[in-house]
Image 1 (cartoon, each protein chain N blue to C red):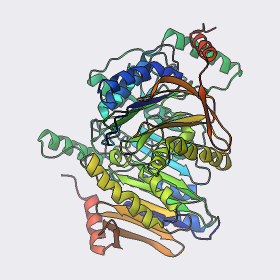
Image 2 (tube, helix red, strand yellow):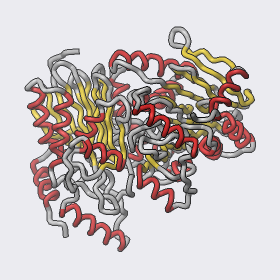
Image 3 (tube, rainbow over the protein chains, first blue to last red):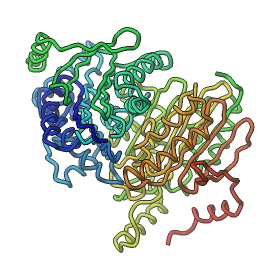
Length: 320
Length: 320
């Protein structure tokens, strides 16, 4: 399977520094698993990203409950956690679980206990800033000014080594103001992530409740296994499914998918403005922006400095 | 989509009375959702079935933690719970959640809270008999006589109305002696279950950790959507995946899948001795037995009275 191409792709602008770090790991002959875990950990650790890890927004009770998953594309081994709390790096717990044949998906208190028992760093994940946002939103909901749910920006990533190994991982604090124990697609095989080193990998972000109705990550990987390019696979899996959801379920939430095949080619599809970061042997780390294009295609363009400046300002703006 | 054929299929001999009840509901113009929920509830309520609902075997701490899911094949709406406890009918909680667009998959304490708040019957699910089995197993493990894990017999079912509506549901107390919060495939879309009324449905039982590596229920439904019969779809999804797992992961757990298409045709595939129950317009409720056959096919034969007698004796034998 060796093709001497390495690659990393991840959801949202927030993953860019992680993609850079993953690139360094992959160029220094690190494993696909190490690269994807370190990528996700950078996003989990950064307090200004409000949908993942430290600084992530809490559930309706003020608790930051996190979901994460890890998959090894060589062996298909998976580990996942859902509704875990007080754990600094949920993705690392998921990766540790992927080495277990039994009990590799743990939820709630059992997941948190596993992390404690196995020496993972515990931390109060509710930052002062996230708490302020939560208090503000509670007041707004009480005033009936806003609907409780928005913001569900999972970091999902795929990595590829020059020797043809692949891995996938996801991490999220889930829907802001979610009900306790709510789980989205991120820790669910085939919905939030899937990777097979002989084909490629995919990962999702968006309204998990709708993504899991279509098992979109599995479907994209399957399509890449039938001679579609990653971009064709993304377009073909995502846009007809959105139409199907609208027709059958009456509505479709916002979601975006990324994919990379075992040769380092990549693709994305989305029904909203969607930023992502990618780097390969042939592409220096770059942030790009995608929109739904005409006739079930995806339009991809460079990010502007103006957008990046506004983003930086927005994520650090005082909470008033 | 109307074809005037109704049908119900479910995993294991334990589902037979549920299949009979579902048949009555479907013949009296009941909905696919009512039929599949009542089918599963009969299994959940019967104390001698040790892998589902009341009488189900507990986790390593002696707590009966249950997973369940419900999917409406007309709308693709899904609801699921994992690691829920003290709830008599987990499948009914899952079905109620399928009416929510947000927060439709709940785990752990959050799932149990939801059931309490919404008036579902709470019950101590640990029977005296299950407690005895747990105490016995703990002693055996302490003596290193047995491996902790075996027994993971999920009830999964698919129903079809004469008007072409379909539904799927699952319920399980999971792996005996599991770690707290362990979740298998049963509540996971595409792995434990999937149904699309325009195509058909599938459900799984067995080692969830391996089933979710292949998203087998989704794959079977997808294949039925490409002109395969349900039996062809089951064979084609399951047997090559078992070989793939052995080649890539080094081993494959035990698992069995059932499927029914929108015309009421059905199929199964398995890598172990597997009983199931089925009824359609053209087939009175019957228990059948499946084995893996030659060349990636499935051998299906009638159950013998001898087998049924031994089963009845086994499930009610004193725990010594």
